[in-house]
Length: 329
Ligand code: SAM
Ligand code: SF4
Image 1 (tube, rainbow, N blue to C red):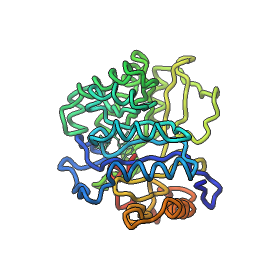
Image 2: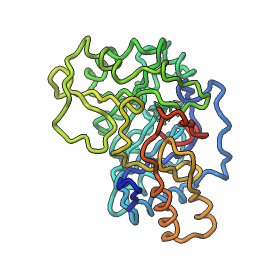
Image 3: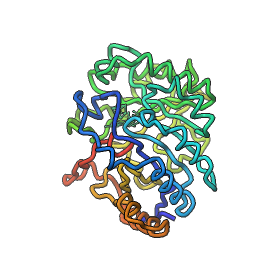
């Protein structure tokens, strides 16, 4: 098992399949993009599957989420999903995507064994989308969303990040859209993980603000039907339910004490936290001929040293060198 010194156990593996992306969301990367990882440094499909196999078979990973960058840009994705679904014990398999290309791929991914999908959608307005993501692809995201629902990848979850002065007037319309279309909406507080280091505590829209705005139009009651467990989202019944909305207060309502996540970057580094400042290099171990047992041992050591919390409020907080797109959100 992957345990740390605070007694937490990591069972949820987030695998970044690429640091590349076809959008440029301003809370994530600059309009001109970033220097992408050179291809030889990126794990091959076989290497990804080998590391995921060690995680699932030997280290107690029960949930595998493929992310990025934009994971749909990875040509081998359906085959990676198919091979993940063949593992024993079979993990839950999910995908976090911006939705571009999902209209074409949702059926193949569901057929390969994908269980669930989270699609990022921050606005209902194509002009705001273009301003926020620097690409004119809003219609592709909406098409991807409905294809995911039609392919049975239900419940389709939507992730939304609100930015002051850009899309913060859309909390209510986004929720209304999700209620009408059967999508499950979760707002995520903006975190200091953008490549440009443009985040500021004063600029971010807080969970309290999001709830206040939603509360003007809907009645929200804490959803006590299920134990929150390690889930980062606080969930609320909307107008008595059964529909819900989630708010992930990563900054103002941290859930580090219940965190069960561990991350594998596209270049094969284990990160025990989004905000970790060090990494453990499984790729070089693997390419250097390490056995599965040796890889598992290195992985255990990497998780053991996980810090108690992200420490964003600590005066000594340092934003990690890798931006979100290169870690895997
Ligand atoms: N490209 C895919 C997507 O956008 O869904 C997957 C990778 S993206 C890094 C994963 C999630 O992280 C998205 O929902 C995105 O909105 C979120 N995200 C990116 N930068 C963020 C930030 N600085 N703060 C909070 N969430 C962020
Ligand atoms: Fe790309 Fe996702 Fe980052 Fe947006 S949030 S730029 S879609 S990786």
